[in-house]
Length: 313
Length: 273
Image (cartoon, rainbow over all chains, first blue to last red; front, side, top):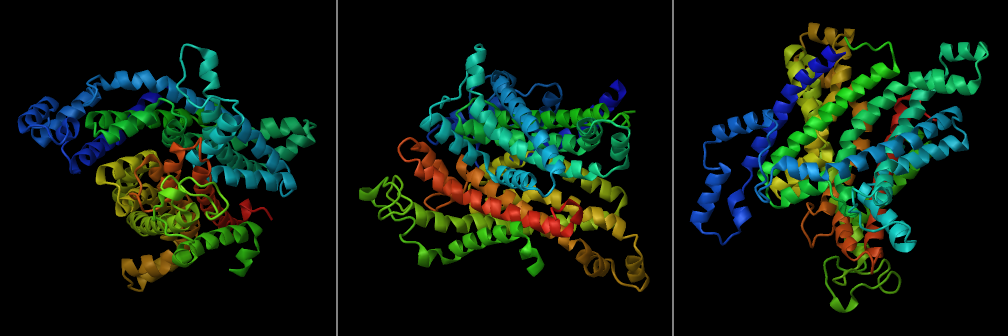
């Protein structure tokens, strides 16, 4: 197991390297000098040159590349060009908000999506199934900023049940939870829609299996057959989708954070883009990529947990 | 075609898409006002009255802007997904056909592209290249190439072992001819189903980028951009963000319904009937 995890992490190195290189090139091929972007158009040439030297932008490009790779490998993403603070410190300050949001959305997706999908599959082509399919199609068609704004209008402005501003005090659990509800529902709805669809189709394909009939014939109650025998076998595609969806979730969290004015990774990335904070952008890309590699690994480990036939040797 | 439209999901979805395409094409004739014409005296008019869906902070007619905005959404979605199908499809087909190390390498590159959140990739590309319509198209194309490469590659792997392909080669046909005349028709339906589903994603991505402020520049009306402007005055004028939101939802939902129906038609196992 440990060997497997180590091998998977090693196998991710080329991917990380490719992303790092891509980011390095992308950030540098574009017009616009970051030193001028930071200092403004009226900066004196001397000031621009001094800042360029400080940022290392005056060194040959390959030297910048090598030092960038070396520093990243040590987990040192440098300091922000704009705020001058270490990137990891800036990211660390907001990451609890992003983790709260992502986990809560995943939880909503699973709690709503799996029962809905199983239910729809068991009532195939009846009105409940048609309704579930229709609703899930609507759910995954909603761009999150649209559903976010609609929810905001309804529950924060019209009925005033939830707060409009989402900058939660992390030390106060009640406040943290209250401000999480609307953003988490916004993100969770899309997730629930995806999970419903996959659970339904995956469940449909196992319902006719022989082992289901055998279990039923042995006298196992139907409920137990469905949840234990059926869902466990139908679970793998669902886990795959949840894993794949994390990437979309992370992307969508940017929009959710803007709509609900929540701090988080997404807010930082938009800020860094506007200010051409190259080091911050590079660091964020690596962090995003690393997160996704880890999630993919966890997904694969979950396969073995759900289906003992999958061995991680 | 007729059989497809008998499926109520596809039919309703196609109708919704057709309405929006009609709105985009007919905008110059059916829009009641000029979409960029500012009229300060008529600013922030609620829906009803002269302005059916209200007016914005510059006194521009929301309905006219939504009708014109359909153009940007459709042009960006159709062009970027068209490009992604051609580029991604070609990469996948050739890679699968050649096989071996080359295939392994290409798919590794595609996996890197795929592992990146699409919206974040789009965000960076547009922010760095500049918020112009062709850069939006480039960004969305980039996010959609990898899935199409995967889809086009998988069937090629098994098709190239089939007798009709071998026969073609034995008859002395070139690789290009075998790929395009013999293999392409076999994967086309699957790629097109994916195409309509990805069009929905492209519309959503374009709207999202515009909402973040990285869309086609004002005063050109875009649905995402209208929501962004409307969001600033959400307390006083909720209609400014509600109506463009409904327009986006309608187009994305319509495309998804068409794609869903098409998939049911091509894959009977998952179908409802």
